[in-house]
Image 1 (cartoon, rainbow, N blue to C red):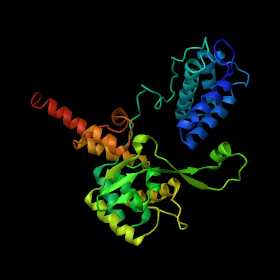
Image 2: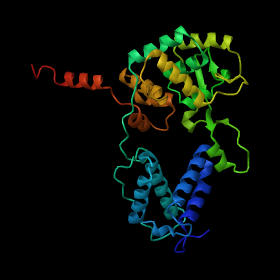
Image 3: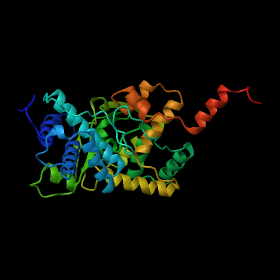
Image 4: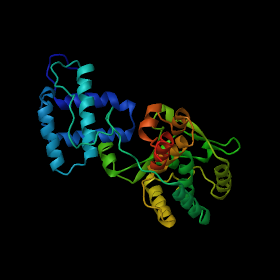
Length: 328
């Protein structure tokens, strides 16, 4: 392998980085990195020395990306990948005279970049939660139950789809989260297995991280619902297709949208159920470490930065409490 003072192109380094990194991430993440490489190749020639990609050059590339209609979120992801590749060139390949990466791009979302301010995530109100539950109780369905489970466990959508009945211990009131279900799109399969004919599919993977493999206690009402459901819908997977395969996240999102419409609740994406779950627990006094463990986060700081935003009512009450009696 080349390194030190020898020349390496950006894509030689990129491929080396991905080859080493792919064993640490999921298949879909590898596909995303391959797609990122394809995007970079639209603006960076194959023989471009990695040292040539300095701040001015990269700013010009990101200007072109913006002009092409690229979203700020995806541009932020590309900037993050560029930095990871540059750090790999420095630390692992020991390439010298690399350009600085300590710069930012105006109006580019850096939500996935360490140290960046995360955008405020929306949540459901207690009244909206109650309306969703009433819809389920009035017309129980597998999709509806999946939504209710997510509401009271904070599961990610892929974790709900990957659940098996064997993961649920009704007597102990525990749910074991040990896999996630992801949809494999035509684009992803083409990148990962270009010679295979595409068939719309979904695959089961290990959880997002080691801490995502966890046990979650079930509230009594949810235990009772699950116990009744297991008798009506016997099968391997918690929510399954007619052929017995796990339901895809895409299908569950469709059920979820119909449920919100029936409840007359404004649309928020499925992940907002997880956000609402975490924020509600924090506001009721549950310690952050416990919430982080239930959510399966790698660290408490992720829980604090991403999910634990106090509502406007809580902030208003806090200010009023702090200055009570000073202004009459």
